[in-house]
Amino acid sequence: MITSEKPSEVSANEPDYVRWLDDLWAERLLAARDRKADLSIGILLWPTFPMMSLTGIVEPLRHAADFADNSRPLHCRWSIMGAPGHAAVASCGIRVHADAPYINPTDFDYVVVIGGLLPHLRAAPGKHRDYLRVAASAGVPVIGVCTGAFVLAQEGLLTGRKACVHPFHAEDFRIAFPRLAFSTRDDFLIENGRITVPGGVSILSLMTELIRTHCGPDRAAKAVHQLSLTEQKHMSAFDHGRASTFRRTEDSRIQRAVVLIESRKGRDVSPEHVASLVGLSPRQFARLFQDNIGMAPKRFIVETRLRYGRFLVENSTLPMTAIAFEIGFSDSAHFATAFRKKYGKPPRSFR
Image (cartoon, rainbow, N blue to C red; front, side, top):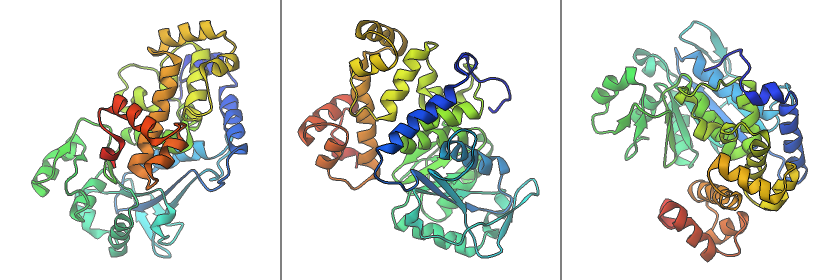
């Protein structure tokens, strides 16, 4: 839920919170060798698409893409694709023009299909469907938003996968695709190169997860902060476990520690180093971290590295040895042992 109220005790007590996150990001960028966008998304709009789904994709990207309240698409980029002069009319009647041609899909990290009202699904340009099939064939992860799940199913792109469908469309999906499994209880599902999300506020949960994965938790923290996320416990649509781990504790020092660890993906960081950065002694830090997060700092650092390792296993073609080195393990054997202990299976089983 988006609200104009102050989002949390963090923003009230720390007016420079966003500036601190930007400074952290700037420090990380200085060491970055690759200056291309961290997250790039191509968007295909179906006729009568829901405007909230489009803004739910673009607004988190906008906040994560630049410093402060600027809106330059520097480190996150997005394009609404179509033939020259093409425009899609949203369900609210607003016309949105394409701002890019059909770009090579491998230039994107994801291609998004925002579906429209069910009777209009076949009214989209044929080139939209052609592009979608090419993107999927090229191995680019494809996201179906709202009735975009129906479009993916129509194109045979959900075979062997479970779709996430809005309860309002559950019976329609069951009738149209009786052999496809689906859920109405998730904010989104990620399965083997396909992502489905029912739209509404759930799209914010998905976008925060993608920003966290590709850009780091500091960028996710800023997007959530700028979108004024409330702290109501019943807000399951913006799942705090995925969207903003750093907000689980009221202790700003521990919040900062978590963001520091996750922004570096657990690499080149130690509990002692983090303790000094947040102004605590190692002993104080270990006690407060355990009390607030539920595990020791060292374990959290290892699990952060393993989460990033799992992402690389599932979403890249890097060899296991390269992934092990990337996340700070001395060799693939140590990585595999730690991975199996965490996830119950060896890394290769997730690829």
